[in-house]
Amino acid sequence: MKNASVCFSHRLQRAARALPHDARATAAVEAALILPVALTMFALLLYGAEAFAVQRKVTLTARTVTDLVTQAAPTKMSSGASVVVAASIDPLLNVSSSVLTPFSNVNLAMVVSEVLVDNNETTATVQWSEPCPNTTCLSTTGVGARSKGTKVTLPTGLGTGQKGTYLILGEVSYNYTPLSLYTPAAALTLNDAIYLTPRQSTSISCTDCASHS
Image 1: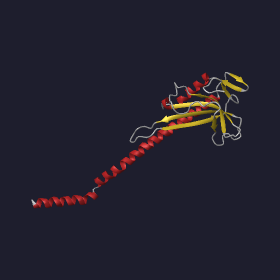
Image 2: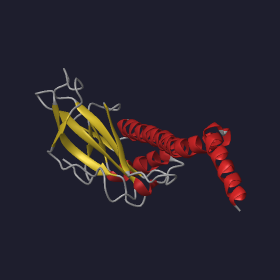
Image 3: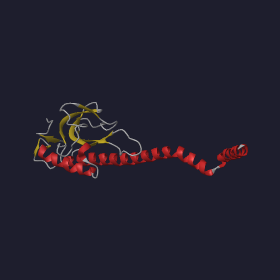
């Protein structure tokens, strides 16, 4: 009995001494330490790549709607201004929303406005504003129609030398929820705004937009 106990003790000691040199044990410990970090980095990489793709789509959508509205065919001309109606602006907003494909428009909000650069050349005054129809842009948060007469702070340098100039402002926001993979991620609001000058005339008047002059 005593010999059996001694043999077992010797075997246990040899196993303990060999454990630090066992490559399989070392690999298992390294994997246990590295795997959570690797999975987290992989998830963040996917989140970042998709968020970048959505942000790019948001920018393209803002550019598209602004560009289309600057070229909108007027129903008539009045005092040198192109006169349009909401019924001609809304289809342009609807068409622009398709730029977001394959991302859903459930989280999309979009609005187009005309602003007049103020004398200080750093702000502009809203002349009219029209939001994307809620049958297309389904988000209940984000950008909405701007009230006539409210001020917009222009991007640095945009208004320099442009006082008295009319600009079309397209704004898009998208509530982006990352894929739920290894670790949950908080929702992000991605947005962009584009300013362009009218193409058909010096200004565009929308007589029945949600907020109008």
